[in-house]
Length: 318
Image (cartoon, rainbow, N blue to C red; front, top):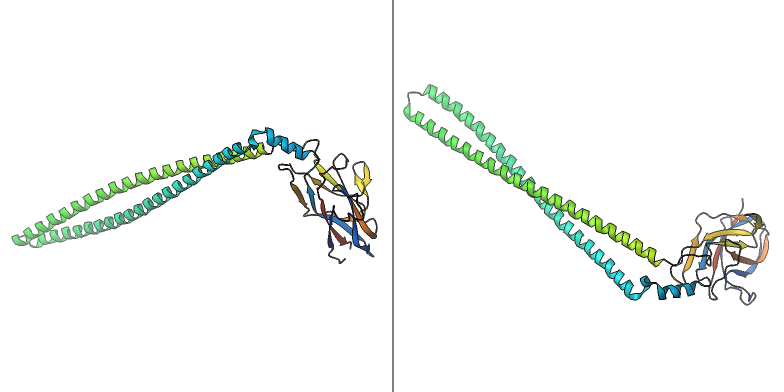
């Protein structure tokens, strides 16, 4: 073994020829070679795979499948159709929201365009008003200078009438632009309100879908861990030093919480990300014995074909 440690995996169905009494809750594994360690080593649980096929669980699942309507095939089909119906409605609402967002974006683009046109026309109207003022000033000057010239005076009056007509036309155009802008703003407001309503309705259906699926999973997981099924699995190993466990000392290595059992024949996996290392009781050994007990200290009874896999990590102590 190097200083970084070495991982070994042990199965409950190994060494059956040497130890025919091996079972999933109590087994001994013969190592391929004898371990003769010269330094101090410690060991920790790295991974723990165990079957959830405890005795009595399979019969419980069979009775549940026969007497709980929620697990009936027709009921499951109805529930799936309900779920798919809700999903289809959510997708339809999402499409409507996308279409509304596209309409809103088009309205916004049209409003921006009309606003720019309105500003351009207003600027041109202001320029025309400035030109009109200039023309009026020039007209006054011409009238003061050329008061005796009737022809020029008539021409100036005609020019003044044309300018007045142009100003009136510009005023009408501005009024039309204002009315068009008001109508577009009203349409944009209505589209925004419709979008808000659609989003609220979609959020409602999404929440209803989440609540429905949560209730469905709660109902389908009606087979929970009872007194017949262990809630915790205590792992003991004969090569580790004894340590305090409750009111006694034992070769205690690891404890794993049993998850809720939903399907008969499930396998639980306990991956230890922060392992706790325990010193070895002896440096020389050729076999390892593993024992599993529940929270009451009783030997755990698995189904006959159950398998337990234990992965241990050995590390040198600095």
